[in-house]
Amino acid sequence: MMSFSRKLVGFSVVLAFAVGPATASELGKAVIERLGRVEPTPVPSPVPEEKIRLIASFTMQNKPNGDSVITFEAADFGEKKNGQYRVIAIEQYALIEPKTEALELRDRIVEKIRALEQDLLDYVEIVGPPRPPQRIHEMGGAGSAGAYR
Image 1 (cartoon, rainbow, N blue to C red):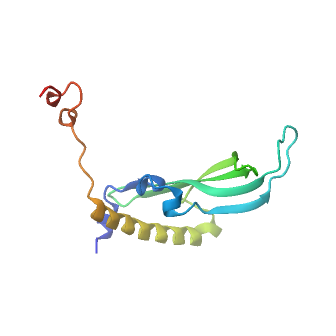
Image 2: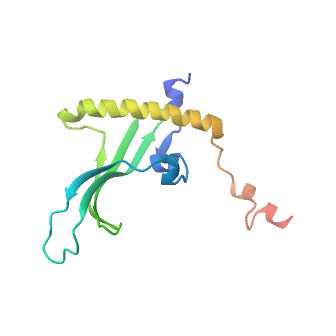
Image 3: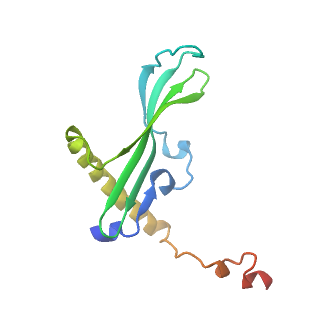
């Protein structure tokens, strides 16, 4: 079992990027909340739409000293019958200093994120550890010694 501090070392992830370029059919679709019909707006309101909400992005930044910043973006879309979408509203949220009524929910979210972190670290052990950045001359690109062999 890895120590808590080891889990935090060097861990910075954008959730959508964490598992690589997987398609929706491979991993399932995003959780979408259906909110009913979009209230008509004054002209030009083109066609009737259904309003949906989803988490558009999720970012977590951990530091070796134990500090974590967790942010996410929720977005409302208008869904037309022909499968097209338009953005209605977008808002950024952070799990820092939530309203009093959200404290318990924030704590549950953080517990789940910590469990996800462990799963992601287990994934790294299977797929391969992070690699140190390469120096330009080690990449073999134009202008490096390796380019003229």
